[in-house]
Amino acid sequence: MGGDRPRRKGRKSRPRKWHRLWHRYLGAVFALPLLWLVVSGLLLQHGERLGLTEKKVSSAWLLKRYKQIPEGIPSVTKAGRFMISGWDGEIFIDDSLLSESGTLIGAVALPGELVIATEEEIFIYDPQGLYLDRLGEESLPAVPLGKVGLDASNRVHLETALGQHVFGEGFLEFETAPAEVPVVWSILEESPQKRAALQKTLVEDSEFTWSRVITDLHSGSLFGTVGRFLVDLSGVAVLVLTVLGIRLLFRGK
Amino acid sequence: MHHLLSIILLIAASGIAQAGTTVYQKPSDFIRSACGGQVPTSKYLTLTSSHQSKIRQLMGHEYRPARVRYWTHNGKMVVILDEIGKTRPITTGFVVNKGKIEHVKMLIYRESIGAEVRRTSFTNQFKGAVLGTSGKLSRRVNNIAGATLSTRAMMEMGRVALYLDQIRP
Image (cartoon, rainbow over all chains, first blue to last red):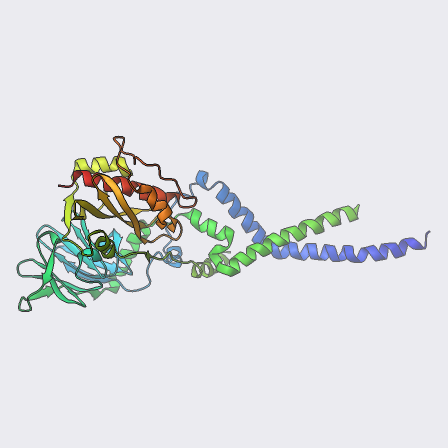
């Protein structure tokens, strides 16, 4: 009997040692990801109470990462007393962001209206900035639009692949523009110095909430395939650690 | 720790996908199909504050822009409306005839999920609907699971289209 005991001990100590080793290293390697999952999970669980669903992301750096702030250089044009800017699809009157978007091609000011033209649409505002009208491709001679301009009679001209057209009263109809009528076309200029002011507007007007960032970090989907794989791996690690822990607990006894 | 978080966020941001825009039918093609093959001269309706007040009851907010363009053909009104689903506008064409919705088609969808509302099985539910005195559609429109906000937006636009038909000259 006494001779059996050391052999039994020796046989069992090897897997037990192996279990301890794996438990220790797996625990160490996955401690940080697991901690993050737990913390971000708690934040999500209580997101509403903590105000994460309302609190807007105000970090320009983070918003840039999320492509909420464009990379390129803004284009600007003057229309009457207004400075119109276009920046990667966002449109600004002076430094105010418009809800309407599109690639800016120009803007002209009529006595009571401001006309902003994008490649696909025209937006019309009153002098107070009230959004009056939208002309989509169904109301335009052709899209994309090339240029927008004004003649001496304050009629709005458009240049498209189909030629030059001029709008009638109320933008209800258009016709081919007579070639001899001189038109002052709106010209866009790149303005790197406008960037800081427009970026400030975008950060202030950002609708991007922290709950979105936390959700994306918690699920791993923010990191694409690699992120989701890491979250899966962390889940498997929890399973393995649980099994090893239970085995060690009972073997220890 | 700060650097680690920065690196994590940097990698993460590269994987973020932007929702795309899908044009199911060009608005001009929709108007053509409803107006005998041509786009008639457009008309517009300027929404006064009393109109906007009624629209606020129908869709929860005022309609932008303040002028709504429409087209008429044989007494029918064709109107193309935009309403935000979750974050982006859904462009939808409506044909209203004698106060009843005759045809609905989702033309442009810009959100990442919820485009199921374009299916005819959904849009056919609007056919024949009139605007009740309570400001509701006379026909029940069943929600699509997973597209609740888009469904809501479509119903709001349906109510506004019927109201515009009532107030147009």
